[in-house]
Amino acid sequence: MLSLVETDEQRRTVEEFCSTQECVGTKDDFNRAIISVHSKELPSEATPASNDDVLGFAGTSVQNDILMTQQLRVYDEPGNFQFFKEPPRNTFGKTVAKKRVPSDSEHGLKSRSAKNSDSLTTAKAHNSHKSPSQRYAYNLVNAAIRGSKKKLLEAIENGEDANESDNLGLTALYHAAAHNYTEICKILIENGALINAHVGELCETALHAAVRWHAVDVTEYLLSKGANRRAHNLKDETPMDFINDDEIRAIFGRISDSVQNVYPSRKCKKHSVFLSKTLPDVKLESGKLLFNDLSKDTMNFETATHLVVQAVENQAAETTVEILEAMLRGQYILTSDWLDACLEANDVVDEKMYEITAINHNGQLLAKNSCSTARENYARMEPGLFRGCQFYFCKHKYLPYRDSEIKKLVQLAGGVILGREPKVEEYIESGLRPYHARRAEYNSNKLSGLFAVYMPGQSIPQRVVKQKFISLITPIWIMECIAKFTLLQPEDR
Image (cartoon, rainbow, N blue to C red; front, side, top):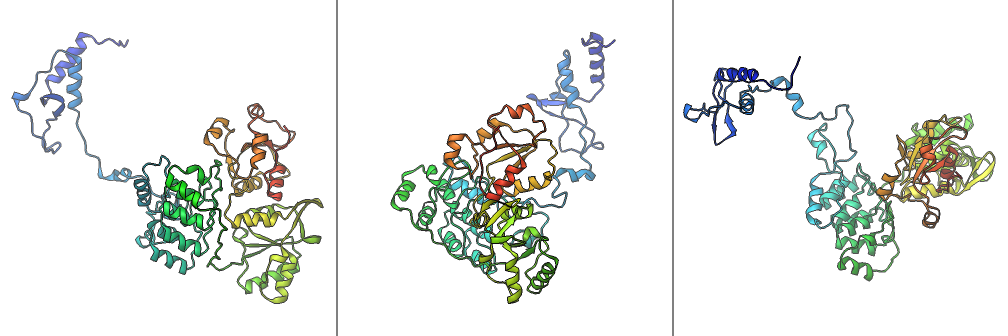
């Protein structure tokens, strides 16, 4: 039977064993003991201890434990396992960032604005899979971060969009504003960069960045060009909420609200036409031939700029998932009359007269002018309809809908899909709010951004039902919000 108490006989056995081992020399304390080994067994630069330095270890088991630990043999790591010394890089062949943003930019921001408690998030891309020329190639965002006027102009001349963003959704203008690069901001804005674009995780503008990082010169320039001082982010914060010194406050007081100067983008307008299968077969084939000859057709709906659908009278169309998705992608949704006009002119004609103006559901009017509203929201780089909202899908059968289609619409609108039941405390602590919720509506009715999607007639977890902060909605509510491009009040509980 095993005993937890060490007997004297056991101690003597250990002492006898230690007496047969080589001595260990120590100087001053045990932590600096040097292992004495045979040179043929393990080469070492350490010199063996002399007999004068040897301490007599005896008496206590603690001393014996120390001695035995010090005499454990140390092995070199075999060369075959050097692979595990470094973490795997892009094991599955996928990059983690669309654009490379050098990390030295983050260091520059922090050193210049150390007094700010907030930290500007910068993109960190793993580009080890690229060649050296690709890895350090300048693009428009990199040029803005580095403050390189020459490289920035080269990128614009090469056709890069002035509203280009990195993998975190931060535009070149946002980075330039944070670094207080007035000349870079001027070049970008004069080449079509949107001064009030809402970007990044919190949907902030360039003026948010300038004030947050005490970029005095850029703050004054942006305000003079009509930057919106009342633009709010997902936490309902405006640039004025970030003012923490008299110098910035004086600039806001000196420059009154001015009209925004809109500069046309130098990027050529693209026509990438997708023809809906709702069109008659004859018209569908004729349109494909025309746009193929003009190099304007596309087989990929996701990259299209124009969607042509079969309309009913008065430029109205029945609600379909295809139309709702096109709205969220900022596409022109046009009637087949536009296709007829293009066929007659044998070229692409202006599309504004042919945009869908009404959306019906089962023949009844559901929304008016929402297609153009959604497209303009996308073009202005404003937050998606469901930004600041989180959705939990109950484990229901969503027939006759496909849950994958409903979830895709939610994500295209900027919503976050939760893989577990909503945690109200976490959402409240985050400070996030639905961007498109009307402020008066939010204050009076306590509209939160937490939603649980369910199908009528199926059970809902009681933990979700009891949470008054979580709104219960159906797939119909999601589609109606998108069709009207408005964040509606949820159904009654």
